[in-house]
Image (cartoon, rainbow, N blue to C red; front, side, top):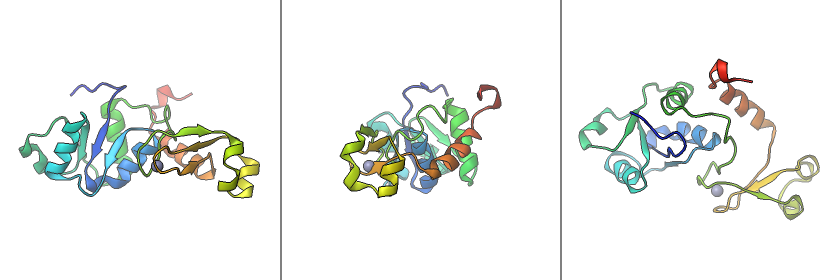
Length: 161
Ligand SMILES: [Zn+2]
């Protein structure tokens, strides 16, 4: 299969919640939900041309659009399989998408968020982002470092700088 690296969007089977979350951490467009299994998953993927991620071997019999049969039951290996199959850059778009509703985050001026963040965060952070859908606020925090470390492990050695 040959995927368009720029435009690939995903529909993750409901059993792949953790994988879906990590793809969103990478900034990838991935829908995920309880209804996304079997025919529901195929329908949703067809609706806006999404690549299906599934562990369901029987899905093949339902004539799905393009799909990746995820081999491992471990999230790290699953992520590696998808990154390699689609030629994704794990760091290029990291932390640009809401982890809850999949919307692309928008920058917010620091002075507009003061009432909504803890004083320590306000005094130590300069860059804030908000989800246009759920209004959740995001800012670089210590857990980002651990997530980045995880993403760096997915990047092929020869492209690391
Ligand atoms: Zn959101």
